[in-house]
Image 1 (cartoon, one colour):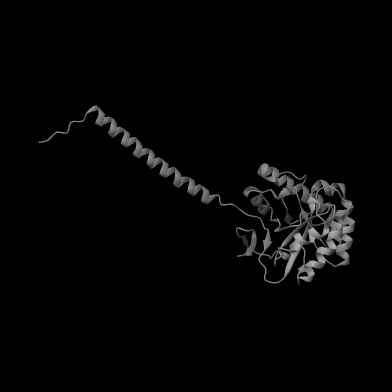
Image 2: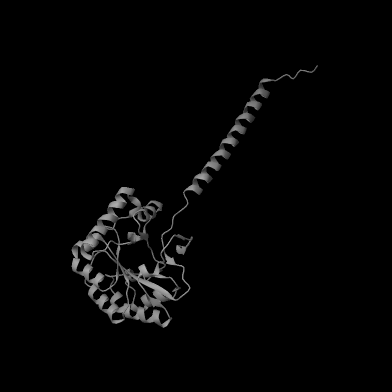
Length: 254
């Protein structure tokens, strides 16, 4: 019969191997747990554009501060018989109620752009709801209708923002074409920014207070129509029913 004699050095080596083995198991388990957690918190994406085959798109305006240009924009839209979407901040609504009424009376969508233009992703869910509901309430008082469209200020969102919007039976809407009018480019540059990437289902971002937007708007509309596109409010662009958004933010009916 043979006996194995374990020296002190052998015992130390065995102990080290055991520790290393347990560490590997723990790391592997941790990696699996992280992967599962990541899969269960997949990013939720708002609507940036809509899956369309026909040539149709939407123009949208964000209104958060000034109001000097709103009447001129509305007149241009009347002249071209074009209906669009205005996303209004609650503070703006309270400051310019007659303009809110006029926007709605002329057949444009009146959307929600938060109550006082915060970074929504920095808020808790209840604070998000307050931002949405307060603005909705102000708009409904003046127009008789509760908005169903919401655009996050600064385009800032996370899963909680999108899910909170959906929980209030609203659509969280971004844009896939930025006119960059807020950087004060020339009217010609604004037109180029709006049409160079135009595709069926596009949503274009403009602002009611940007310096050169009033001069650019008729040129933008003409350029879009020359490409054979029809311009409709976002409420008419978005199909009704259950939907998903792909990784680009394209809205697709289920």
